Image (cartoon, rainbow over all chains, first blue to last red; front, side, top):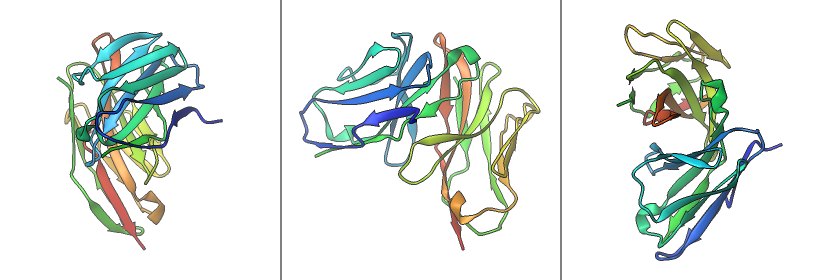
Length: 114
Length: 114
């Protein structure tokens, strides 16, 4: 029944490692997003994908790469992790054809880099 | 560019008190406006929305009116409960870079005490 799911919920890793976070939505939406929420709760969009095509790419380091094997999935791969990457990462999806961009969020992945 | 400014928290209220969280926006087009809520340890949930001027969004006793003349979308509730304790985000949606993009305010943490 979960609309937008993410795995893992918690991820603790060391600097320099490579890690991935997975996201799946079962809402049939056209567009998926990744957000980063910092320790002060500020939300910043990182990427969005529409029908497997990247349409927004904010100024994030190229160590971050979104990968979408199909419309229902948008995974986030991070290379060479740094301390500053520690944050909560949220996946979201929306049905863009509605034009009102109501987004449905996943529960978040808390990434801690040590 | 688009931006959202909301009152900084934290806000602490007693149960049954009146709540107002101010939100103003800057947008180049005609955005849709949203309030999202984030309960502790969870992802964001849509609380209410308004898609054109003078529309009023409402849900769970919360209300907000889209005021184009003052570029505002203030959140109100007549009588808060302990269960309303959460972080509230004001956001706007506007077409940019070929897709609708959500721009969030910095969030306002609300704590309701018995």
